[in-house]
Amino acid sequence: MQDLIASLTSAIPADVLDQLALLGRLLLAAVLGGVIGLERELSGKPAGLRTNLLICVGAALLMDLSIAVAALANLPNEQAGAIFRADPARIAAQIVSGIGFLGAGTILQARGNIIGLTTAATIWVVAAIGMAVG
Image (cartoon, rainbow, N blue to C red; front, side):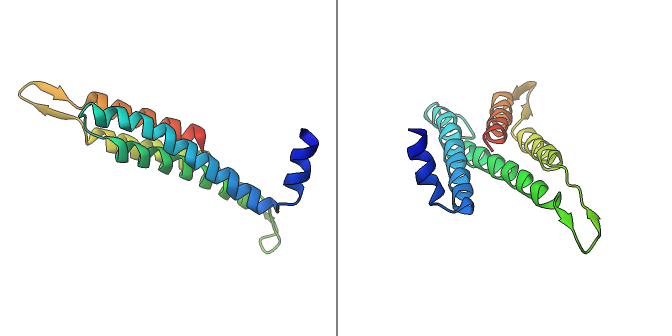
């Protein structure tokens, strides 16, 4: 079985395999975010299917971008005569900050009642799932 997989993948260029792997991760993020969003949509809660799907896929895409930029940036640069270092954790930290801002926007206080905490927590968890998939 491994020989069959090796022979099939050897005929496909490496960049195409990388793109297929990215597509698979984004589809997985869409499914996972969509499942959570569908549950919220069917329950009539805010931040339903589209919101959760987009947050999960966006976080996965940004994590993949972060890793790709770091991999490219850590290559030797002949013009600079040194290696430029990039830290993939920087984009991840900005995802967390942005999602925190988005989640804070869903929390409302009216007449002593606080609503939207579950929606904010859902957004935060969906982004974390997307980051893990990406």
